[in-house]
Amino acid sequence: MRTGRVWEYSLLSRIMQSPDTIGRMIEELESRGNAVVGIPTEAPTAAVPAVPDVPVEAPAESSSESSGELYQCPDTTKQGTSLRERMASLGYYKKHSLDHDLLVSFAKFLQFDMSNENFKQEVENVARFLYFMDPQQASLLFVRQHEKSREYFLKLSEAGLSKQTVQNYIKSVKRFLKFHTGSTDLCFTDRVLHEDCKNYISFLDNIQMATSKQVSKETTRKRFDTFQEGVLSSTQVTAVLAAAKKDFLAVIGKLHAGECSPGHQLTLTELQLVLYYLEAIVILEHAQRPGVVEHMTVTEWISRRRDDTRPGFVVVAVKEHKTAATFVLTQEQEMWFDLYFSEVRPVMLGKKRKRVEDDDETDERFFISSTGKAIYNAYNDLERLHKKYQVPKVTSQMASRAYETATKELSDVQKTKVAGYLTHSTATAEKHYRMKEIGSAVDAFLILRNLRGDSE
Image (tube, rainbow, N blue to C red):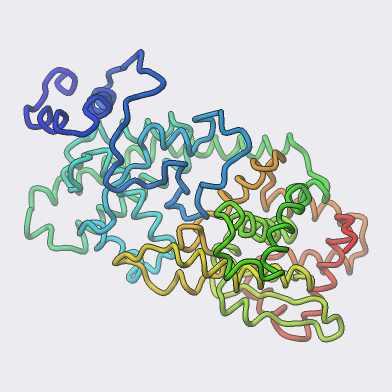
């Protein structure tokens, strides 16, 4: 009852001083379990948050650096239909500045001490959580608000996030607190707060235990749904590439004809189409995991190897991380990738806004988002491409399963080559990277191409 009936005068003052008084008041009421009805569809214009996670046209989980969300689906009249739009409309992408001392130190710990490649996303998860707990100031005082914390994770589920994703948010907050209780001077500067933080970690443990069964059920349900859907044909796997090819080639034609001075005359939508299409080639045509797109480096592109006996094919080995893989490109596709590298990528990099925690890692990544940062979740981009061309969504797992099924009638030798091509391991990538194995990779690629019925 206290949270609904007792109000601090200082809080009311901050609400009244807010540029969007009504919106701020509604947000506070809802955070206390009240329901506000009759809100007009066209709400009064609200002030842009100090550090919004996303542009007005929608977020690029952006922070989950996929490539930006300005690439819109055909029907723009349907608002709030996607999870991303729903999260943005509910304000769950709002976050505190990543330059706050609490977050900067946490980011450095993840990046350098823990060697966490996805540290930026984890920091942004925490920044969003901190904003929900106190929009005015990022602090550790949220550890004294157990009920509001539980409400936040519940709201994420109600917004449509999967149980596993909510668990990831909880893990991020938990790791954030473990860092501040175990790797800072907090135990000496504020013993009471330090103890509260430790108690809060136990509180998070209880939430995790309660939701772990839900995560298991969710995983089982997804597997069952996949089983019910059946296996796609090889042609269905790359349907979105066929649907988008005409538009894609039109943009490539501009670049190839030298009509653009390094891509600068292309629209953002055209730049993103080139990026998304090439990502889809890697994930769908070659059944590679999104991590291959997210981690492929400039060095790995420059070091691509050509087949001596069939110079029309090149092999790219992505092996400097846990998602190691090899894929083959035709001469035409190599030209597309090279045009992206020389014309489109520099424009993407030019959009980068430098921050304290930025380093040279982004500059080394081959695929760059439209915000100028390394792509964090390639599936977001793939999903946008499918929506744009109104083609049923296909994942790398679905593609891999389709190819494996299609090879059942092939000889054992052909099956072995395809299996090796689709295997994601450092050993396989290293093997294919050696010149004597390039021919085997090209053989496997040609088998897959024949299964899809591609003419060239």
